[in-house]
Length: 302
Image 1: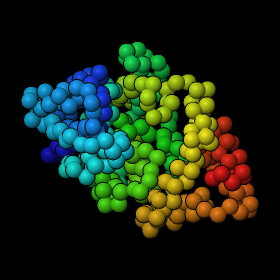
Image 2 (image 1 turned 120 degrees about the horizontal axis):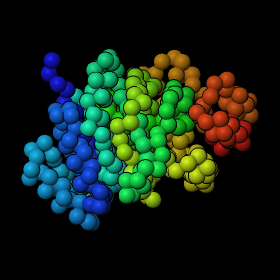
Image 3 (image 1 turned 180 degrees about the horizontal axis):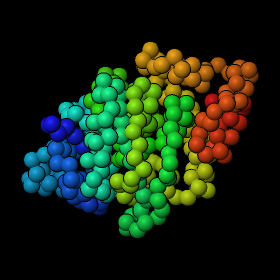
Image 4 (image 1 turned 60 degrees about the vertical axis):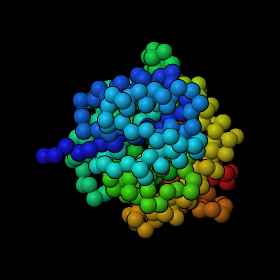
């Protein structure tokens, strides 16, 4: 059986300090049928020249020099350019364990390739010096209703199939919270998500990381309150939900259509707010997060 080709998509921006470790870990994968496509998002340091040095040594590395458009659009641009069987997002400053792609390919090969599918694993958290901070969450549970309000996956742990890539490229979102969250919504809403609790990524936590994952529960809770209520995070989640519904509603199952109909309602009605607040199943995994969300429903912020 011919091995599936995997395109590893990396968006870089001023990543010269750590990119060598990441590139080396990707090139040391036990799964060899890979192509690394890097889109530089307008770096002003030595990132580009470092990638060019790798290009001279390896014929499966390709570099695209782009203008600064932000990492979300940069990753979606990479998806549009790439041609493979499977696609994996890669950050510029992590370290992959050597079996990451092999495990993902094995998982995706078991699924119906006519549906949008995703395989993802776990990650442990490290500081900038690669000193262990903590271990990734175990026993992750996920569902479409949960995916509307939080993303249990991380982009650098994801590998997706061609169907997922096509759905994103054919209808790029006008707005989405993160590229990985949008990808996750597609797979959990219309296809399959395969999760392996095995750690495959050493996630380097930077002060500028987009989320506060891995910094302890109290810091994570404070980060969520700040970003959800003070930084328009709730409004962004609602916009993402409405955008997703506009594009993919007809492709959703009747059950998922009912769920997104309820929670994407744009006009506040007290009866609907109560219905959302009293929804019988958990919407976020952590109890305190779930309770906070239900209060937000009653207030009418979401």
